[in-house]
Structure formats: C-alpha cells, structure tokens
Length: 316
Length: 236
Image (cartoon, rainbow over all chains, first blue to last red):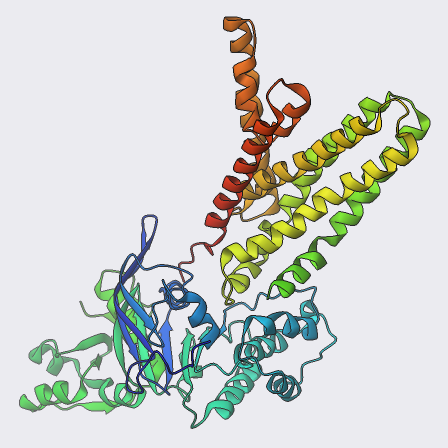
C-alpha cells in the first residue's frame, strides 16, 4: 500500500476540482465547478438540499464520473484510483444506512478488513469514547448512536482526509452539538483535512476554517470563514438616500422596511466607499453565516425572478 | 475482504437456503414415498420449482433490497470494486440456489434410486436442474441489479423470462409452419436461460450446449457487474 503522502506535496490542495460538470439525463447537477481545499483545514461545503453537494462528494470518491473537468483527491484521480482514495479517506454519508441486522461489533468487524491501515485499538477506544453498545443491533441504535458509529467507521483507519456528507441530518440539536464537539476535539491542531458538507450553517460556523457556498451546481463564494464574515455585511440607510445613490457594487440582497433599506453587500469596504462619496448616512451590521448564505442563495434567486420572501418588499 | 463480503451475504441469504431446502426436500420425500405421480414427473416438477422459481426468489433479494434500504452506497463507498461485491453475492446466491436441488436429488436417490428412473438418469436430471438454477439465477440477477426494489427486480426477471419464452414459442411455431421442424429454434433456445434443458430435450451436441451456456453465463455476469457499480443518481 502506498504511503498516504506519496501522491501529494505538502503544499498541494488535498481536494482540487477544476471546471467539473455533471448531468443526470437532462438534469444538469454541476456546472463548471471549481474548488480547492488546502491540507489541514476544516472546510465547510454549504448548499441547500439539491444543490449538488452529495453528487460532488460521490465524485470525490469515484462513485460518479464527471462529464467534464478534472478532480484530484490527495493527488489522485478518482476515476482511475478510486480504490486507493477510498482506502485513504474517511467517509461519513448522509443518512447513516448501515446493515441493521448486524450488531455494532459485527459492523466494525465487517468494515475493518477493507482498510489495510485499520487500527483495532483505536476503534475500540472510539467505541468506548462514543459510548457505543457493542452487542446492540445497528437497527436498534438511536440516530445519535448511528452517527457516532458512522464516525467511528470513518476514523478507525486513520484517514488524512475525512469527508462528512451532511452528517448531522436528522439529529436533535443536543446530539448535533455533541457530534461537532467530538469532531473538533479529535482533530484540533492535527494535519487531518475535514470536508464537511451541510445545509445547517450555524453548525459549521464555529468549526469551519473555510467555506464554499454551492448554489444550483456552481460555487457562488469560496473564502476563509473570517474573510467572509469581514467582507459580507449589511448596510442600513434611509430609502431616499439609497434611491439617489442607485445600486451599490457587489449587492447580494436588498430589503425595504418602511423608509429604511437594508442592503447586503459582498465587499463592505468597496460599498462603504461608494456610499461615503455621497455623504449619505448609513449603519453597518455584522452578519452570521446563516444570513450571509441566505443573501447569496435567496437574494440571487429573487434577482432571477423567483418569489420574494413574504412580508418583505424587494427592490428589483 | 472476501471473507467479510461472503460472511455478510451468507448471513443475509441463509434463510432462503433453509426455506428452499426444507420446501424441496419435503416435496421430494413425500412425493416419492406416496407415489401419486410417476417419479419422472415428480423429479421434473422439483427441478422446475428449484431451477426457476427459487432462483427468482433468491435473485430478487440479492441487490434490490440493498438499493431500497440505501446500504448499496455504503458497500460501493468501501475500498472494494463493484464486481467484487457482485462476485460475493453471486457466489453465495449460487450456493443458495444449488443446495436445495442437490439435497433434494440426494434424497430422491435414497428414496427412489433405480426404482423407476435409473441412477444415471436421476443424476443427469438433477445435474441439469442445478445448471438450470445457476443459469436462471444469473439472468434474474443481471435483470434486477439496477432495480430499486425487490418487486421491480422480480418483474424485471419475469420480463426477461417471458421474452425468451415468447421468442422460443414464436420461433417454434414459425419453424414448424415453414420448415415442418423446429431444429433452428432449438439453437436459439440453447442461448436462453433454460438452454441446459436442451441437453435432455434436443439433438444438439451436449458439449456445444454446455459451451454456449458457459459463455452466456460469463456474458450475463459481466453485464451485471457493469451495471451494479452505479450508485444511482442523486441530485443533492
């Protein structure tokens, strides 16, 4: 078996997607997707249900072939080296579909032989840490226990890259927090890269180093989380002053409330300079990841002529 | 890895083996002991049930439940090639299909060996039965390998079965009508899932029948292996 680092330089991205497109019959799922994930990061891959997250992840594992473009995972091509990639990657799928008739011990015993680097001691340690009942059948596990078992199966072979596909889907808020706490505790300061797909923004906000927002098969924003929070902000100003200035550069979303206008902009420095040139009065409001995501996704949808949110008057 | 795959399949399929063996063995022993029908008819009926209906049941439960329950993606996301998953399934499924006929044949020889049917004829009939079961199982599996549910896998298998039966039936009618014989149709039938029956029913050389059936067996499994690898479209 090849050493984990034999196919990739230390500075090379762990995941590199270039101009990838994918269709299923007449449905275009991904178009000209570009993405780069550096080593050692926790990378949040955000998008609504149906945005193309799972298709992208399946492509990373060699389960789907791209119609166009190239994909590299740990320096390997998933179309050619799918087996080697799967040996080196820990994968936790959305909806933990496991063999319900197996006990937890049997599920671990079944999975282990597929991975040459499987560490039984580490698996045992994780089972204790996650408080997994070894003799219980998988079908009788709670949702939280199932996800923990899935995480154990994804981690016990010491992967250098962990791909989590909406892992907390269906979990209650407390279990979700516990899961994320476990994840952060395990990998804090390690060289392991975590590729974390989710549609729940608030859950990735505390753990993600970088964020990519996927909308209808394309990346609409890709940047470090801090940079995203620093640059995407909301400007609130009187409507009459906004009307005299006209559209601000990098506008993502505009809402009118009475005589006020709230504008979400992609680059606050640039937009603020534009407003200051006219000596208009304005306030800047910080946004959380949820609000930024909404501005990118829903804001754009409405520009495209979709239905506006109820109770808000949108400026075309 | 192979051990893990075969172990999983065995644990999932073993109840079908127990059920099939109990059913065929009971039918054979009671039928041969009571002698309500001639031994040859009873053996033929056993072979039809064990060689066609039972493989359909096994093939339906081989891949489709994994797709409907979502476990197929988990299997395919492991560092294992799709054909290896299919090979483990096929190996256990073939054993589950063949064992009831084999055990039924051994019981038939114990109860009625050399009574109405000589030993060699009984052995030949049950051997054809096992071969028929394996061939039919391969076709049914290949037909159902992409189906999302057991019911649809069963329907896909029955459609393949019906199309062959139709082809052979119509071919026989046309052959008799035009050529006053159906020799050419026999050669078509040899390529079908029930081609091994031609060892008993036709004048075709046995070596040719076996060679064609082995080739078809390989082609059908290759077709199934090609189709099983796709996890299904997910727009998510």
